[in-house]
Image (cartoon, rainbow, N blue to C red; front, side, top):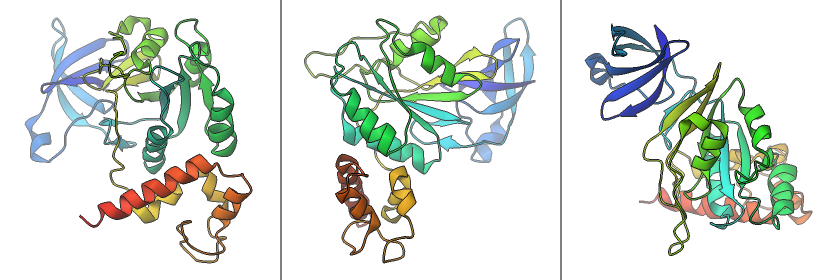
Length: 292
């Protein structure tokens, strides 16, 4: 039978089969011998061991569409990057790290600014910088008054979506709003440290409706730019793409080179200065990382 791994804990994999429910499975030893590890989101075939106890064994791992390292999940159609408008305050550097990571892995992204009931002062900033200039869809939501929830739900339909973002931004509350059966522990933001407790301990995928799955993943307070070379970074900023190949120098890094079209666009405000500043910061970070 064919299904999808929706959770993995301590060597057990929980496989959802459409119309049949979830089966607790172990993986065959040959996967370990082949260096293949099942991931949440993997499509698999299983052998049923007990229909009564809903247990089985993973017989085969089907080819992956893609694979994310952090969070460690497979077969993602899109990502919803959730940040809060307040409590905790949004961190553009961290948001851009998430976006670069997803761009590098060619995962389409939608930005969700949650807790909009607490602060609407920055809506113009996110619309201008991220939607108009960088080209990302931006949705403003509140799980308190249900603002934007139906718009998010519509964008999930027929896709496998990963929810990502730092702790305390309301990912678990968003999941509860979208999939009430998930009944997640939401936790409270620590007033002392100003960020959320990590209420999600492992990656888990929830069945929403036919052909629609939703990942919830552990929150991150920092994000390393793993697997990206400094020279590749410019391709992870969508607003740079129309200028690619038009600079004086082939392979222009858009840092110190003369006659750089990206820097000209920056001067004309068609590229946001805050995004470009983060680009330069990440570029130096990646260059320095290669030295050690």
